[in-house]
Image (cartoon, rainbow, N blue to C red):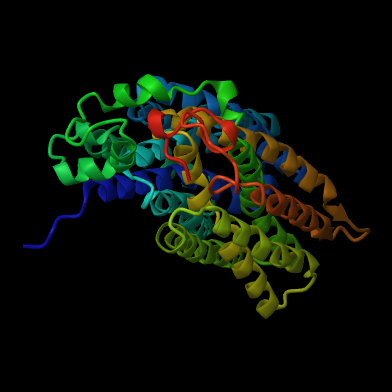
Length: 456
């Protein structure tokens, strides 16, 4: 008899599919921006402002959703997120003016910023340290793989229908799919699933069992037992130098991701004159390479480097910088160099997702992951909002109306260099000669061992 697939992987796949459907909106908005801009009269600056407003409100929403996730449970927050996403996606298909566009982008960021943190929080409880980077990468594929196929589908659909609006209406209606999947298959904690096996429970709580926080076989009050001595206040987060470093890593990752999502389609259209369908295929190269890079990185982080997250985060930024510079230097459609630049950016630019998104649960505990991840992601999106405005300002237009995106890409490259510096500050263990108090985590932060926190 073949052994059944552990339910934790079913949870991971369900969350990936659900998040992928939710992520369609940002992909469609990006690749259809040339069509939308022409229809309702948006300038390059307006598109940058729209991205700015979405990210500006999306950031604080991440932190609020993290607090609500820890308090009320991630499943409830996910249900709200899906409903809000469906409404806001269909609303996009009805906008008629520049002001409506900007209002919709702000509302979208505010309401849909509730999607990621609860999904990641569920995975952090179902997986222990040896599988967290891979679990996070499966979730990250929602924003890595989705653009690879959705950019093609959206551009083909809009071109054949001769309308970008119908694309938003139809995909908004698809919200019923992730809603049903979450309600039927997702559970906040392993012990809430009636058919859970003892083996799966032991796997999920292996770190807490090893630290003596809970006893093997006694999982009914696991959350209360872990939190009894493992509470972390907001200020406690910043006593941990590795957490602070990871916040800056997140900021650079969000700047890079939204730089690619927002500007690659426009760059290909304006610089190389690619038509809508052609531009969709070229945009997909970045994300296909990203899926490969993120998988390789998370596997190495979990299995080869045994939870040493710093190595792959550094590899991400060091490998990414030259390809961003290469993309910015291209002024003509040299297909070989363009392929190298897009694939290199995608492969290296997405390597850090699994490793660094697992870190808050390992620095502290999965039980406060919502709070820790919410602030971290909120900061990332908030700063990325301003980076979208900066990129737009750096795009120049010559006397003939030709746009030059080079300075924008060089700005992204400088941010990547800052990512190298931030990643170098991550500590993956106690520094030589440093005495660690049993009630304190890395660099003096409250927690592990006796408090059930898992230290790298």
